Image (cartoon, rainbow, N blue to C red; front, side, top):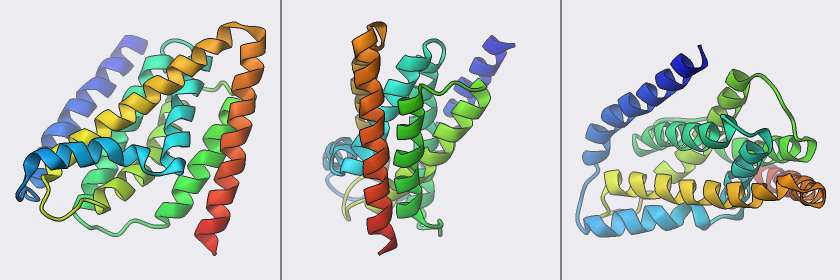
Length: 200
């Protein structure tokens, strides 16, 4: 059953990529290489994105297998879909509030070393990924390749997840567990700051 679920998730990711590619290609203009480079650096351009994506990696490491690799797959996959919506410039409600709440909730999950049904965990992470992806998608610079930009921000996001997973290795040690829970509290508090700024 678990293998079938993982296979279904992987196939969904492939299907999503196939659906996104033609639309992203419609945004292709000049200077295509710049699109990938810009997208690669975009997740690193905002503290809110950095903290949330690292928190996803840490939480996955705390949970262990299969979450340690499943979450870093689910988040970029749903983020790509959110980016697709952003590239189309379709309306999406309360993006900054959603991003802020993602920091609060995921920081809390790391703080509490929260465990739950894997389907719920993947759905929660995927839901918040939509907001981050939409923000990336709407910020495609003019004259850059939309498809390569999308690939770039997905790769950049994956790199941040890897940073989180690497930090999550501290979970093997008692003192490391405390450090990671402290990191979760920092992410949660910063999420509150982001939310306060978004509501001003």
